[in-house]
Structure formats: structure tokens, C-alpha cells
Length: 102
Image (cartoon, rainbow, N blue to C red; front, top):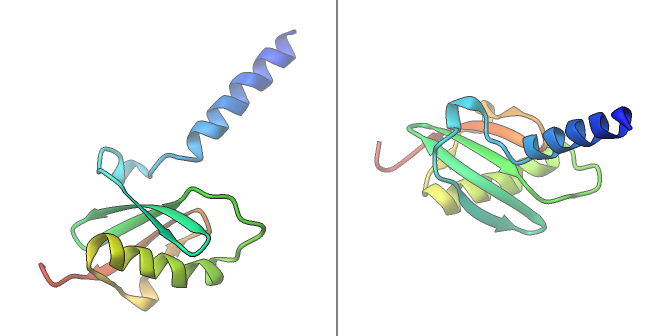
């Protein structure tokens, strides 16, 4: 009984974490952008953008996600991602951007 309850709690915490921005971007409103088969929550703070991919895909690599993530950044913010500034992994990533308004 205790094991089942413990597993339920751990599972709930894990699933909640799948849709949570990093601490620096918490409270920043997200724009939902779909590019191809990827769905992103896009948040911008100055020249930093964070993307949280919320859909499921079979074994995507970071390199395969970046082109779609770049499009999502431009759609949501009008900013251009700096190519060598990508950090993160397939689900949660950050990039520096050049924006017309900065």
C-alpha cells in the first residue's frame, strides 16, 4: 500500500515537471507554437528565449529539434536565434536571440 502511494506521488511530481519552465522563466507568459510535429511553449526575457517542447516524439535528437525550435522562436518573438548559442536538450532549451526591438 505504501509503495503504491509513494509511486503515485513520485509519478505525479515527475509528470508535473514535464511542463515546467526553468526557474528564471517561471511567471513569464508562454506562447504556444506548433512547427511541423513539434509543439513548443516559447518564453522570452530580453535576449534570452526558452522553449519547452510539450509533445511526444520518438527519440528526437537535439540537432533534429533545433530547426523547428528556431522557427518557433521567430514565430513567437520575431527574433532570430543566434546559431551557436543553443543550450539544453530535446525538451527544454534556451537560445540567445537578436531582436529588432533591442
